[in-house]
Each structure stands twice: as structure tokens, then as C-alpha cells.
Length: 79
Image 1 (cartoon, rainbow, N blue to C red):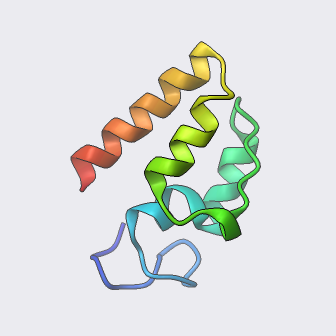
Image 2: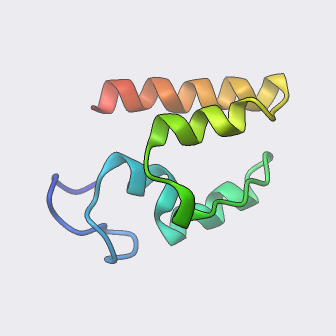
Image 3: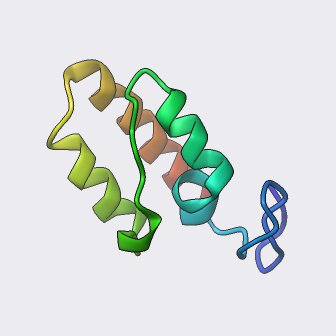
């Protein structure tokens, strides 16, 4: 990833922040959909990474919950 305040190296569309790097970047959205969870991300409705995680965790099975827990843990370490 790039330093805070610079544009995303993946798409160049937005500032490289955790939410963009993990969820709202169009390139990352393709990865989420191709993942075993098959998540379709509507970035227009996402303003907070933690709320996004909570909304999906309530609808997931245990394997997906473990994957999301790992993502949340990574976010805490990264922040």
C-alpha cells in the first residue's frame, strides 16, 4: 500500500485508506466476489469498515466469520 494521503496504487481513484484498500476499491471488489464468500460490495452504501464487517458477519457461516475476523484483526494492526 502507499502512504496515507496518496492515491490508491490499484485503481488511482481514491485516497489509499484502510476502507478503500480493503473494501471500496473496484479492484478489491472483484477479489471479494471471486473469494469463497462471493461477496458483492456496494461501495455507495459503505462509510465505515467496522459497520460493513458487522453487516456481513451477521449473515455468514463460521468459515466466513473466521475470515472476516482475520480481516478485522489485520485492520487493527494496520491502523
